Image (cartoon, rainbow, N blue to C red; front, side):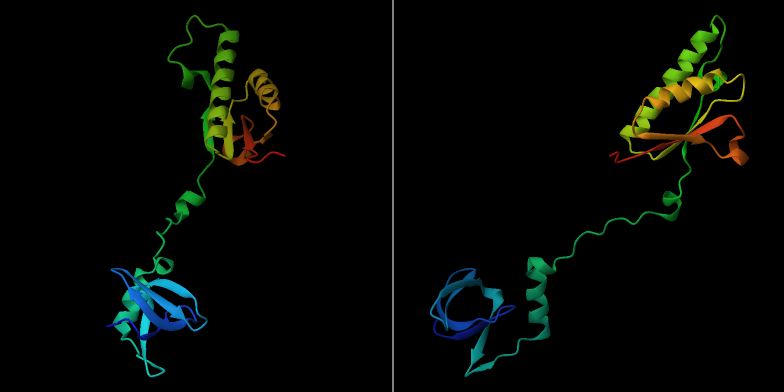
Length: 182
């Protein structure tokens, strides 16, 4: 037990001095240089006749665990291998995938619906920081493909390329979203 007048040394600091006062949770010591400093009671160790009392392993361990520096940080969950190699987001723009029936729709209405869907999905991917999207437009006469190129060309932060031929054939394009455009 530490008392007033005892010589103490501070854990984790090269400071030694005599105890001047003791409060409920602190010990004020006068250092060898003549300064008064206050420490938590568990941060000081009593010295007897210039030899330190060697605290037990349990005391040291308990005191170190109480110090904030040694508190464990919560672990960040490591990404699972399957999450690292997620397939790109796919958006199928075939008209029969977007509406139940095309009855009463003109070609212009169909292309407009497909373009609106493509724009909405691209904006969603940009807001969610999804790096890559594949738009499946089909082969057809190439009208939708050209309209999509025009639409995506108005975005500064996207790069357009043909999608994987083995998987999609000629009927798809891949959009890379540049996350930090300069």
